[in-house]
Length: 336
Length: 199
Length: 44
Image (cartoon, rainbow over all chains, first blue to last red; front, side, top):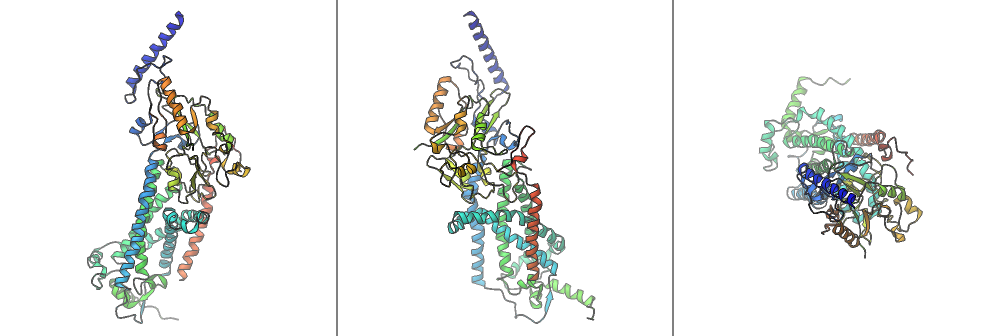
């Protein structure tokens, strides 16, 4: 009897001093003063999920598994990322993709195809070499695969799944998803080539400022002077090169999950990857429109590489002048 | 109809990992895939708590919401399952899951991460959910079809991990906290089920 | 047109090449998280 009460008193003393020490060492969690049934309070420092989450974005601890990611007990940000994916992204996609298509359709309905003033002439001029055209199609072809497979991840379940059914849609997505990863590499090569070959011709200058001020000729039907690439094309170039580089960086990070950053970082990178993608899609739809349906004579530039001279004089007057001056200085050698 | 949940009483968990071992054994889970894990918070410091964590089978499951191919479904017991046939291994469900439940056979994400695997509440998978050998090979055990609860909770050495109808295990936890006078709360319940057990 | 077709061929070729190279870097989970204490059975 006597021994038990000493042991009991000792334990109580230890518990009280322990809780005092704990109260001094850990200011945040509460210290319980009321003694539970056993007399010894193992819960002298309360640890609650809410308290931990008040100070940090996720709760981590120690784990015996070799996978360090498993240390994270709860990351409530996942629900925020889910809300963004389900509620925000479909709207952004609808506005940027469907909205752009609608605007372009409206533009075509009102303005129609922009024809070559005075009609096609007889003379043509070489605008793009074989290599320039090759690298453009390398980039453009890759981009189309990337854009469509990427859109499938975001919007496929709303647009295609009801049409194809679960099995077929999954089978299709199971092909598109790896295609998205692997076609990224020819795309990256394409934008590097474009940067090397076309950088000098795409440096912005006063001519482009004037071109924009004149509305690119769209507003008044005139033809502001432009070099090899006009202001709008230079904009497309930089969006493709810089946007493409951002997509490559975020995409590569997504392909190697948790190598560079943690779960929160991966979520942010995925958000950025998707946003830039949708903005680029809006821009490229306009580029594709004007380069094909929107303007007579434009497709020749990337098709055969030879464009109508009249068209070139109207839309890239400074470049034509330069090319003609070059030709005059070094006349072509007579054919053998 | 019972609404199945998990509850880990962090004040009882002794980090023995019996739940992890039971799950791996019963479901033949390959090495590298961790359907269930035990995380110790404040290890070695006052306020050390261990929590056994696996899929919580949430209300309005975030994994199901973000899946690009909609391969998830919810059973009548509100167990959240998915079809490995439809899964494309994109990894989205891992980003959305607050509890890190989805596991993948491949570490990198080019091509695919492989078919996602996670705790099934020992309910197997689709394709009949009949407890057949084919189902076992793909999804693991189907104890629920035999009227049994998940093996992790059954094997818990201290009965800290409880599985069963949410009302019943919440009541058990409530009684425990009242009787012993302390409790660090039902970890994950606010996030998974949007409710906390108030004592 | 020829350049377009050439580009398509190169895209397919580079993508296939990338998949073959990257597969070298792909680690299955049971290998990536292997420790000296763990005996790894090949996955079925």
